[in-house]
Image (cartoon, rainbow, N blue to C red; front, side, top):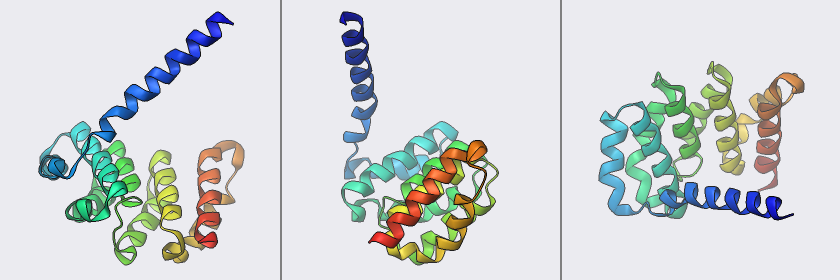
Length: 166
């Protein structure tokens, strides 16, 4: 019992430690975020995209300047972690659906990396009914072999529920 408590406490501390930097992102960080999105290395771009997503989740207007860069990174970046982080952020920053949905749809249907496809599906779900045009592609993703692609199938199903529910 004592060991189990120690493991649980240690896990909780790791989760809390990992979540701390996101809580510290403020509007004052936007110049750094924009700079890293434009000129940073792959790790800096991925972190900046994540930070933009956190900033936008709190107050979308604070992250609006990052949206064009996030769209471009989600579409074109060579690093899958950057594309994934950008796709995740696009579901949180309150960007115009007519600009975001086509990019996320493209990533869902055409990206070669599964984590990017999953991030795109989840972000489409976060957009709710504004992503209604994504339902056919999400349905196709949800019909894949669940044994091979369980995370994508689950993300697509959840996104469809979110789009239809709102």
